[in-house]
Image 1 (cartoon, rainbow, N blue to C red):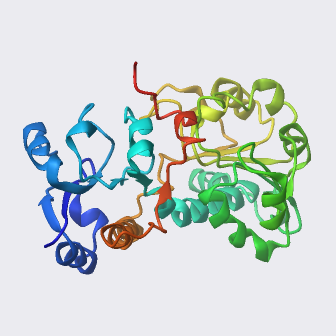
Image 2 (image 1 turned 45 degrees about the horizontal axis):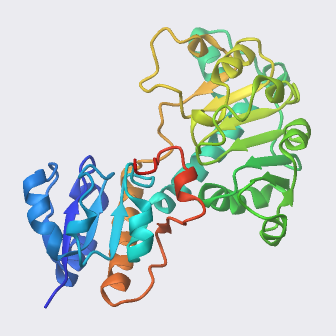
Length: 340
């Protein structure tokens, strides 16, 4: 008899994350309960939960109901993060795997981040705006203040799945890469081919800085005004993960002053207010949280989910999604411990 699995991906759509082939694999593998784009009604969820072996969802919006899930072996979140307000302690005690599809976004964000860095250094968007206004400058006159990525020192803040996807894209440019990640040991970072470096030194010595750190309870505005002041004037600062980790007001002021080149795909509040000052920063390259969610790449979420679901129902450990770890799960900014 097939395992029963609740599939409730809203706000995502079924055809957004499952290719026809992976959707067929899903239905061949398990007995799908719900499987619609609309959010599953709570009453239906509670009826299905006692016999479900896995839940595929976008966040945990069902309340404190794990006691009614005796067969549950996995919670798979396709939002891009780990589910909020989930009783992680109960999951660990009962060996319920809590899994995130965040790695499916890694290649998308890495490619876009590289594009932001090059476009900023070479002032591609700025040159386009000048051209459209009839104010362009040709050849060397149009390249005052621009520079190349080749042979430059690169600093990466947060060496998780996004950074690991970016690293091989940087290799052809003959860059040297330093990394700061307090959740990883120096030995591990060296084994990945990057140089562990304190945050202050990384900011002061890098020409290209990529912020890819996961937001946590510990790193809100970690990159403070004082640290931003350390960045060289001829550097590019690419904010790719979350605005949570940067003093965004200070970053905005520095972008307006042309202190260094800024490229960001994320903002403290989205949509960004029409009157936000950073919109007026001529030297800033702004993107409306578009690094992920590319249509052709989103089905990697579904592929990863079905691959790991196959492992779970066979009693094997999942390998493709990111697993919540007891040492870290309560440190993510998106998660909160259960109230006692």
